[in-house]
Every structure is written in structure tokens, then in C-alpha cells.
Length: 329
Image (cartoon, rainbow, N blue to C red; front, side, top):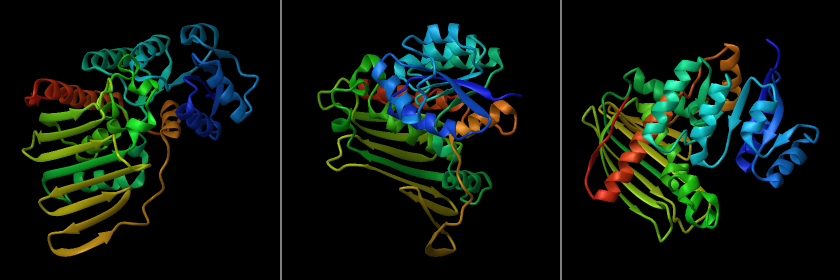
């Protein structure tokens, strides 16, 4: 197969990071850019010396005019559904930024279209490709933690201040607040590492007069009987991001602090750090390798479905003040 011809729908700051990684993949070439903002297109072109690439402000026009094999989508969240469906209909492989879509109904439609198309569809949850999270997933699958009985997950970010006045706080474009944005990563990695399904969620949110959720507190009951809580703090008074995940099994405990991995077993109270793990890769590389058939998709669209199922149920719980059953695939 010749080089994979890839187009980009969305050229904002996040997308430009993907552009840089794709340019380092020898089996791929970027053939087109699209964004509703000319300024964003020019920023991508200038950053990577792509001045001769065709560029569009309408993604449908790009799909008509440019011969491509694959696209990456990095646009406001509520636009993902229409763009994914159009690209799959065109016969293109798709890597989409998180969240995949903003409703369970849309997620099921996307999965149906994906199966019909036979193309690669992947969500850009990069933690699936990072060694420490893969290690935890493998340890749990091998039974090294025993039965999972409790999970605590925290994300702390000055999201409210950092996104004020931007599309991420406009419900029509974002579909939701931090829980649907950065918090989507936290929900995904907990579900993916443990392999657990959530049976029920009780949630509380604080909007701070924004259109969207800023702080979210989720109490979870898993289908295996285990319990958990997820705290998404979007109004942190400090900068940067802090993530903290602890998983209690019946045989061992795993602590993930800012990506640093420690564990403690029932037979040894000493806390051990896990280091010298194999290297990590990127969703961009996994996407290309999956198209070429040299690797398997590490973040299939079913992950996007599971995240929006939990997110949508949490929103409904916060709205009604009662626990909500979570639909699982």
C-alpha cells in the first residue's frame, strides 16, 4: 500500500499536535486541511511549513474535492457526529478526538455506520497507548488485584477559568462541560483498565452560572457489586491538571498519581513503585498501523459509547436528583 493520504477536519491547537505526530509517520502524508477559521488553518500551515496544502472552510467540500484514505476530526464536540457519519459514508478511516459524540443515540448510530463501512474508527483516548495504564489493565485482567471492590478517581483543573468565553463553555458546541471534555479521559480510563460496567450513578454538578457543568461528583455502583467515586473539579484555584486514580482489589491496591504507578499487596504493606515499563505510543501511530493491518485498534468506538452512556446518565441524575441506571453495550 502507498502512503496513507490523511486530511484534517479541525486545525486548532489540539489538532496541530496531531499534525506534528502524523508528519513523523513515514507511512502517512497529510493531503488537506479544513477548519471554519482561516486563522487556524494558517497557524497549522505556518507551524509545519504546509503552505502548499489545499485548505477548506467546509468539511463537505473537502470530502468532495480531495482524494483521501483517512481523516482526523478535532472540532467542537457536537460537530463530531455529523462529521464521523459523513466520513464513514465516504469510505474513509476516522480518528476522532474525544468525546466521540455527545449522546447515546448518536453513539449507537455511529457504531452501526462503522460496522456497515468496514473502516477503522478510533477515538483519541491516548492513555490506552501509555505503558502505565496498559500495565494496570493487564494486571487486573490477569487477576493480580483480585476482585475490584472500590475505585476513587479525581481530576483537578482550572478548566472554568481556562475556557471562559470559548466554545467549550457553549453548550450548543461542547455538548457539556468538563465532565464531557477533560473528564471524558478519566471516565474512559477507569472503565477501560478495569473492564467493569457501571450499573448505576448518582451525580451532583455545579455550573457556577456557566451553561455547562464545571464541578461534578459521581457515586458509582458497578455491575460486579463494587463501588466507586469520580470527582471532576473544574474550578480549581491552581493551574495545570492533577489526576489521581486508586483501585482497591481484594488482593492488591494500585495507585496512579499523575501517571506515576505504585502498588501494595495484601502480603506486603510496603508501597512499591512500578518503573522500567515499555515505551508508549500515540493514537496517531496506532491509527495508521491499524489501517495498514500491522496493529489492532486500541481505542475502538465502543469505548466512546461506554463513556457517553455514563456521562449522559450522570447528567440525568444531576438534573433529577436521583440515581440513574446506566445502559451498557
